Image (cartoon, rainbow, N blue to C red):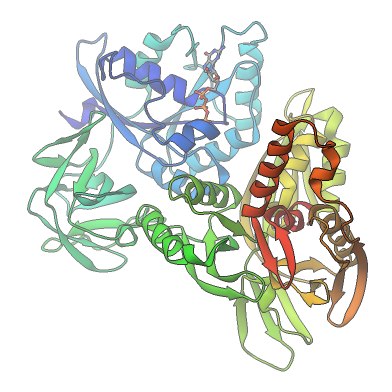
Length: 597
Ligand code: GTP
């Protein structure tokens, strides 16, 4: 197919505005899959993705569409992840496109993620086609949404499509608009090969499958290729397209999207954003915008039973095969024994990995509260250490720098006060506020990342009845007055409970956590004091009283099923407990530190 009949595009949208449903409709209308094969939301293939209702990994599908002009077009739809943790992957998926559909819910209007995605698309010079979805809803107000797109984003809406992905209304016109208003790929097949890696996955049989967009040149089976950031060389064993299953072809040319199989064994050899070229006809420079995966959030992961340590290691190895942004290294904790310090892109990424370890690998584990990466310089030293585990903070005077983000929040104006209060509480600095329409406001704050990874999002949702949307970008490191707070259980410091706090908040947090632990650690046969300490100074103390009755005493002999239930509940509780000294501490306690942070 001639380049002028190709369209490479993405769908960008705020979560739940209907990206996947629109993709399904486009696939259906172009008969790309038979109805039998048509699973709903074919692009979100992982179970967890489906369950959490979010798109994690970018994928691609090629559609063939015969337009009203009687030409058949090749439409490459590249799906993008739908969460801020994966913003870099989103930006690289967009870099593989020439255009984007900007989907906005007709009843909701523009949200924080809509705007963040538009900026990424504009940075990548994409042509943007606005699509107002869900116009079937009684509360839909497409005209208002179109005005928002013009006023807030500054995009013309003359060509905008109004659709209902649910009923299928407007999808045929949308296909025509994709063909008429999104640009054909530029690029020159006669130049040396430049292919952008926008995703990859590990296949047990074939090794790593790398998803590429050919920018210039062409690639054939048998070609010797080189990955430009690492200079590692490979041979192309197979290449093809997604229809949506992988289908072999002989050659991929400038403007095409497809996959290559090279016998690469490790996903970290084909990192998203990197450029592939030919060994014998090398491109002079790589494509712009590459950076290695960057972990932002760190936590210790420990097996409940020490017997599971090897299994956990193998599981992490396997997960990393498919996820270059997951990092881990062995770590020991006095309290928790042998485990791993893991690095994640963000909190959601962390939750997904932990959930997969539990479900797919059936490992019972405990995770510590997430932390960020601090830069620490001891007084009198010139060396700056990078520390991602609060337990590793040394005593003594030092300069500590922590990561900051710029957060954008969109919210109905009635909640502005609540949002500002929350941001203030989270050590935020106000940057800017503007009206989106007469009802909704956009607020920008400079915030420490550490405050975001704890429970910012949950709090924001509850303080705004779920109406706020939030998006952030990393801005850099700044010096902060931070201290380490230790928690002692029965006089023993529990390293896994140590946390870093701003000195203004250390007392309050120490006290909150001591109180919370008192509630979540079950009573035992003896009294358990819980203390929070700044260095050697105790700043808070609570006591868990000794146990008097056993659980069964409560149910007066009678009901046997009730008794059983109680015993089972107790057993269940046991499974997720870790003995520290002679005190049994449940997983909940480790998370309590997180929730109260
Ligand atoms: P993420 O993948 O989580 O980013 O969400 P998404 O943007 O892909 O949204 P999805 O397609 O999963 O749709 C979200 C919800 O909106 C689902 O319950 C859909 O059934 C519903 N929905 C999508 N399109 C329409 C529409 O045109 N009309 C109505 N009434 N509901 C729709």
